[in-house]
Image 1 (cartoon, rainbow, N blue to C red):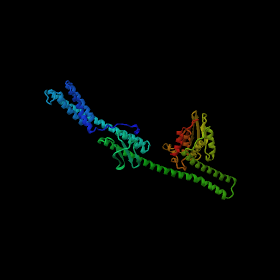
Image 2: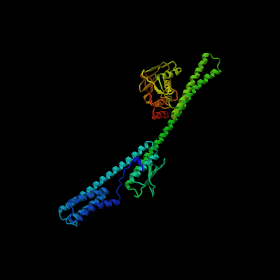
Image 3: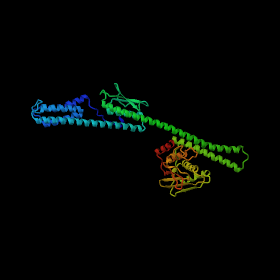
Image 4: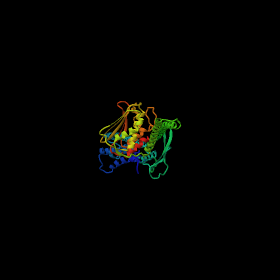
Length: 487
């Protein structure tokens, strides 16, 4: 049988009445048997043996058996081992003093020892409660199901108190019980209540002993109270997390609806206006006609990027966005991305610098192109018109590091972790879905790298990502990439 985390601590229950009676009588009687031989030990040796008998009686039975053993030892020492023998009369005054000194000493020894035993028992009980509750709290916080945790707790109670069976049922979990033999007889019931309301009960089958002692009952009731409080705290924590999750989901839905509505409606409106002008308007010159067609193309590409971002989030959450990695030069990817985005720059100065030691890296070119696209678009969207943008790539034998510098308002330190989560757009009031950085971060993590944001020394923000050379990401890193998009 597997107990609660292999937690087996025997409970030292107080001795029963029969055991206490035997402890108080048997030890002095055993020493008295030394009076049977004609040549028995001297009275001082017998007195020491009677003190030992009192110690044994107090240790086994407690204070009352210890005192009883002291009195019986006093009488036996007087009757059998002090002249005149077989009478309670004491001839010599020094023998009388010795007898009373023995009585006082043995009583004090018995009481002190029984007090120490009780203190030890109380300390063991407190340690037992603390260890059981520590195991309970640890497992409740570990994310295990409450049913499994309660089954382990029932196992622990059965092992510690030598119970034949234990069942724990609550209002929000199914009945739990350890793998024990079928219970028989009537159980003892202990209510589980927290903050004035019942949340369940504990049913205990004692077995052959018949019933629990008062001390065992007290310990189990204390454990039941602490168990109820822990379960109530867990229930409230789960309820709070559910409410927070619902609120967070509502905020995400509102942010997604707002961002997608704007990012879809704006290019559609521009496309509809350009198409309507071409169809219904008067004759256009070739330059005007080409201008309308360029507008349609740019807005269609913008709409295409929004849809692609939404599809990529779905693929990341499903674990279906798999990288097809080939050795590539990072400077070629940077120049290709920048040439494609040239119409969006609006006359901005863009500086590309690549270190001489930047090696080829094993990447999915399309995905890293998307990372650079999202970072450059952010630099365009969140910075003043015509402010410069810089792309810098440096590397060594281990990999490359790419940074996109802008001259915008920068990112506050408290927001630098949050902006890589889906639908987060920072504190700048600019429209968007808040998906670009989340997707970029997930792609980089899926390549075995990492991404972060810092301050641009010239003012603004610096978005940096690292890509390792020829290192396939581990399954944990791929899982982290999907998790970053699911948060």
